[in-house]
Figure 1: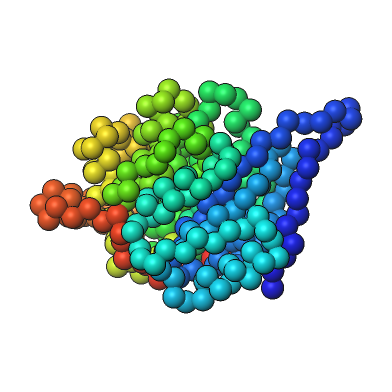
Figure 2: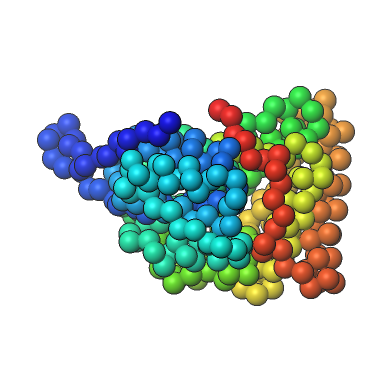
Length: 314
């Protein structure tokens, strides 16, 4: 069941003056996301907004065949700010982002994976930092819904805890980001779209900012095979970015990683055997990513979908 858009006009402060409002365009990128796209659109339509204002939500659907397009169409009929762009083939997420960048009407853009759910204040916290003209990109704080009662669930949670702690030191973007639209597009062959945007924003002399209170809920893989598939693809993507753009993300910097890793071990001493296994599997994933890119000459910018990550329950 769809919901009406809760619009926010310029809101008055306690002194009766009008606050500055920052309009934004939102892009969502999906391929067969019928399990989550309705919940995602509901979450966006019910955001608590004061400074931010959602002007449009553009859903780019790449060759979806599971009813996702029909569901988005149902929402768009009730909420005209929602627009569906249908692509007949999958060209990769970065290519879909370029379609959004070309169509987006506002200078502040928010991009969201189709398999996550933002908290009710997330858009506000991703957009408000642009009151500072030096800020060029803002990253959210991904929080997994996975339980830690098995090895894979613990691995998922460790990954995002480390991501959070590293991002507090040096902003690292993932899952859902906002940025100033200072580019015509990103390399369509990039398998790590947020990192590619990071590189462009930094090259423009603008700052990256991490918003730890901009929560977005995601679902990790349920199996080691699916998780390894993700980590391998990301490793290849980061290597490709380093090779082509000479840009290295902060999570690849050992000086940022060491302290959070040690903290994790001290905090969870009974799971050190899990941590040892995680370190070995991560190292193997990075080797496989290197093998794919350097030896096989394969850049996985159109990746196989990990179906176990597609249902977010919060």
